[in-house]
Image (cartoon, rainbow, N blue to C red):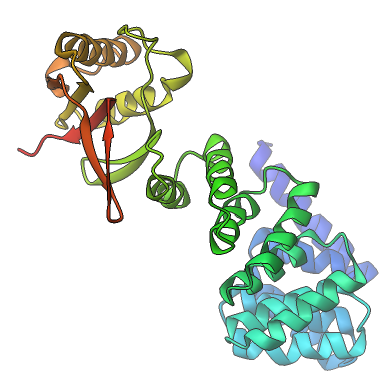
Length: 322
């Protein structure tokens, strides 16, 4: 018997055992974990028909309906669960999520507040309470909730990023700057990273840049060199490795390496060659013709907001349009 069949049989056996012993919570977690929301809905509808005052059955029926993007249908069941058992923090949290889904933000907040009152360690209730405050521009309250989350999990991506947003709203720009760099240290990829880099650039920091590689916009940490040399610093090679992988996957793609060094055109040229050589060495399938080069002995002029900044040293990646 292969592993997948064995796991399938064990899952079925697990559900049968749960049904026999009437363990509503186990069944609910099973259906959620297996993403069998429709079957779960039917099971809990039957349970409620037999006992409308089963708070857990009402709760899980609400969860199944929410998972199917039916918040209006879910709402009365989660409200019923809370009314039957008002001391369960999870019931309040998910009722808050349900209120958010139907855009009742006032009641959403009330449920998160009740959840953290009942269980101060309810991390997700603190997180989503922070989101609710953030949406209402209550920056300090949002910030405080995110710090509670980060004390428990210092790598929580939403709390890390939204801490920076809250600090911006509080006009604590130096602390926002540190928070953005901290987020990018752990989460350098994806849509939120792009926003974090844009915010960093808006503060005048171009140690990270967003570039279009083909049709995809990508966040890159700036390429750094040893002082007055073309020797690339090891801790700034991640972007070059990423670019190499993208070029390997798209053989027809060409990306121009543009190097600037104020007053030192020959050094700019050497750095452009160093970047290209690193990429083709790290990813041998990449051809040098995919990496045309340009170099300039002057600062790069960049705009951020209404301001202009001159970067004495920089490396850019610009997709070559054919």
